[in-house]
Length: 308
Image 1 (spheres, rainbow, N blue to C red):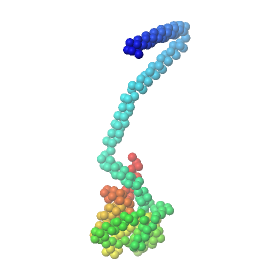
Image 2 (spheres, rainbow, N blue to C red):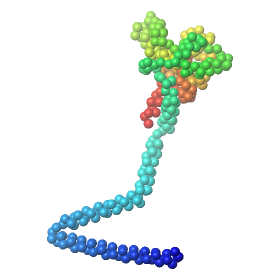
Image 3 (spheres, one colour):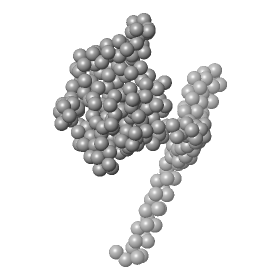
Image 4 (cartoon, helix red, strand yellow):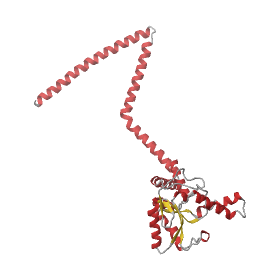
């Protein structure tokens, strides 16, 4: 097919299209005229039904045309406006958060992330939170005869070996305790105050140092009491002894924390126990050390992270 034939076919197409369009236009024009005459005739006769329906149809038609037009041509602008509004809301909310609050939220999220990775190790036990019912763990007996949770064995060995390598000698004085043993210790502690205090006051004083059976971390097998080899009793414990100081300063590198710090007595409810180490894992121990958090404060941060 050559160029002239193509042009001829195109002209013919538009000619036929033009004729059909004219016929359609004339037919539509006749229908509209016929409709208008009928509308006028009924209106003059006092029948306004067709007029009312006509107006309603016209309104609906206009509404549909406008809606379709907005959908086709105005959707982009609408989405843009919504996006801008949402962005503005987020920006406004962000501006309302102080730098201190933002830092607190970031820390809370960091604590929550670390907690989620180590939930099984991070069981909070204190005066308000007893050891979970039916709690159990895989026991491991150390050369000293004390039992621990086997999960902390490798890091405990690394801590004690590093302590020796640094020129210090340690002494393990307690680890896992049964409820029966804990009861004996508590009774002994109460007896110390019984001569000068009432039974109730003596128990209250004893609780500052020894927990009731079922409320002691030592039931978990994740706590261990370590002193320098020169420490003869906890009554004359010297926190400035080089061995004790090294353990307190470095335990976090091996996943341990000083469970009852000197500056957190009001929070933990327990007197300063620089010999009491709790295994929480290296990541959590590092977070607590850097941010100077007690275990209770760390868990509070985890709970706080759920509020935003």
